[in-house]
Length: 379
Image 1 (cartoon, rainbow, N blue to C red):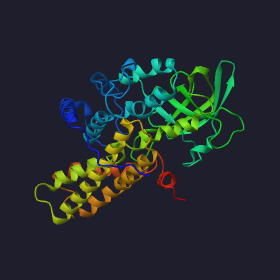
Image 2 (cartoon, one colour):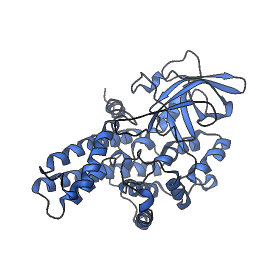
Image 3 (cartoon, rainbow, N blue to C red):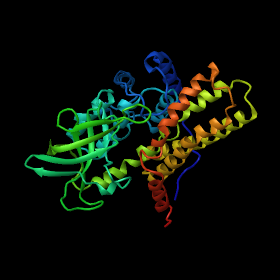
């Protein structure tokens, strides 16, 4: 049963929102060209500034460098940074997924080792789930980790790992039980991308960026104490991350800059079609935002809203793919050459090239619909 309700952000988050906006204005030079897609700006200096403000690991215990703040407060900071097009990619995965995973399943030594660096904005993680020739079938993992003495020997390949060529660590999903299949025998292991010998190969995309990577493990040895949680519990742990990965505002704001520049270029006297498209897009955004805030409320209550998170991502990604086409059709012929439309033209081109990834990362449409159907008791 879906649990979306009419929850709203608490009134005491308003002052935090203004604080974030003031910070963003102060850092405009460092931010540079804004882009609302969370994968496009890897800036260690900016992440460190956020760490100084206490805006990374906001909900985590103070003993690990966290702020013990609410999921609503974290939502506000995330929303403002994305809307402003801030370069958040460096710390993004560590803050959103890797840290919460370690908090829930990691050993005390792992928490003490990795979490304080994440909250300071100086330790960055990547995701090691997808593999070549497996599509979205995560359960078909073939990368192995065999125990040898006091180490794991890892062999295999991971694909589409964002920023692995820049980040420090990756949490890889591997098979630790020889002969196991599907969901059984999987474990998560922390690999040091700079010290353990993994080969990282950046993959250039059609937008000219190198955010994705192929990572090859050829007899890579890592200490036994790098396994996260119990060996063999990897599938349960991976699925527990999904509510964090799929429900945030990044799932419907990646194309937001296009709408901003479209409305700005249209000015105070838009055509009827421009006004209609702007209103339609705003209605989509407001609905998705309410749904995402509701999931934040469920996380605040300690719930596991996997189905609701999948629905936010599915609908959000549909909107992100639709938005550029909506505004293109509403743009009058001949205006794109005007200087007033230059920023829109640039943001539109960037988003159009990035948009194929929107419905792939974090689970394809088909995977998400399966999660939703099972959650609703459908077959």
